[in-house]
Amino acid sequence: MDLTTTSVNMKDFGIELKDVQQAHEHVKRHTKITPVMDFDYFDNKVSCKLYFKCELFQKTGSFKFRGAINSVSKLVEKEAPTDNVTVVTHSSGNHGQAVALAAKLCHVKAHIVMPSNAPTCKVNGVKGYGATVIHCFPSERAREEEASKVIKETNGCFIHSSQSLDVIAGQGTIGLELLEQVADLDAIVAPVGGGGMLSGICIAAKSIKPSIKVYAAEPINADDCARSMKAHKLLPNEKTPDTVADGLRVSVGPVTWPILHKLLDDVIVVSEEEILDNLRLMLEKTKLLIEPSSAVGVAAVRSSRFNHLIQEHNLKKVGVVLCGGNIDISKLKAILK
Image 1 (cartoon, rainbow, N blue to C red):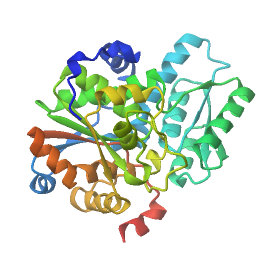
Image 2: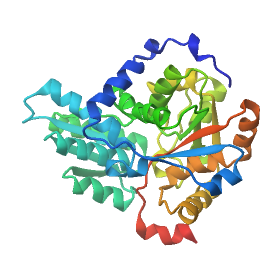
Image 3: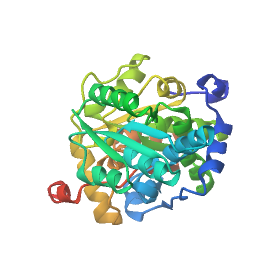
Image 4: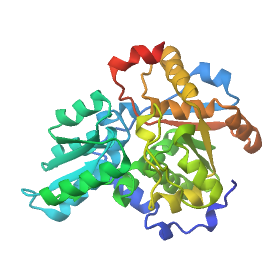
């Protein structure tokens, strides 16, 4: 898919560059400017220069804190005093941890609905930040229904992991930083689940540099974004996908879909074997312990499909978002076999 983004009016999405820039100013006292790293090994294996944006070093171990602190802090500003403010969300882990920490920093209560198969390290992370965890059956519908129940019980405010404009703006700060850290970037590759991070990056990067390419990386077992782009209509996964990339089991939603449909250049799908191979490779060659969702992006840029895109669009410098590093150590031995 080849897009001329100059013809797209970002205001049509309800979010534009200024919203991402305002989010950056809003959250910068809480968030880290994560490092960008490059490695000779990968540059020798791929016919372009790769720049890895290391969101595993963000607070809570993933990019999710950017959107969570932007959303929760803006809510608190509107609702002051905060004595009776409660935030609620559902999450497989990273967004839950992010909302839990954001709530703690903003001095409000948090209730996090988590599927029963959520990684133990992520459940413990949420509890460690002082939030209340409510377990549910591992499906999107069960998560949504349980969260609705908790909202009624607590009179809480829902913070969606990807379909909130404040969350999207917060995640878009990744794109602002990456373009400042790497001059003349030709493309950005990032994993896609609900699409909040990728939508924010699209808004920021395409507004600043319309010619830049933005590609989604997605597990073939959770390929709703790829199928939706091909059909030109939103096609959510009909059941919870069976993928090791637990952070990408949710589908693109109604807020992020119009943004991705208009601004995303392509979707690269990868197999479960490729995800695990590249997780192991990153640990071996870079000493970075990333989670499987991050490895999806690495697998994508090392695929034959992406090599074709490099040649087709003469891509020289490509940013790759390593979205997080929250992985159960207890499961690491099996993954590394």
